[in-house]
Image (cartoon, rainbow, N blue to C red; front, side, top):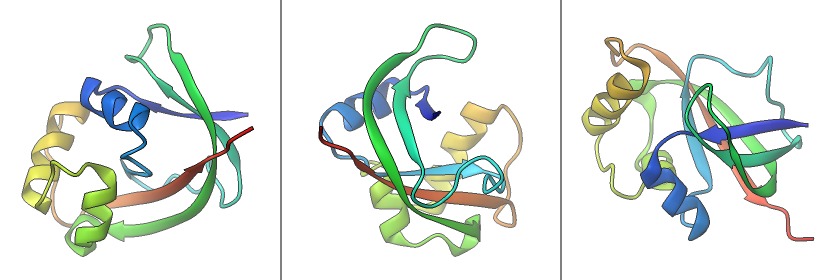
Length: 115
């Protein structure tokens, strides 16, 4: 089983409160994640221990350029990020590189599986 891991402490809070059901990832990740796949939602820094929060199913993966992201994509990614410019600034902190409006992203919508 694969994991969708989140490194940001703020994302952890949103995931625990079930206020986040989408993630935007840099690049095309369709070779790793597929619609209807079951994944673990985890939190933790890269190369450190992770904490498993809950299982989820990937409902839909959309491939877009950053410029084509909708307000719905942004809101489900993080309700505190209201503009594409704010998302780019956030991504530049995470990925430690310059991000442009023409960069490709994967928009992954997921739903918790309740056992």
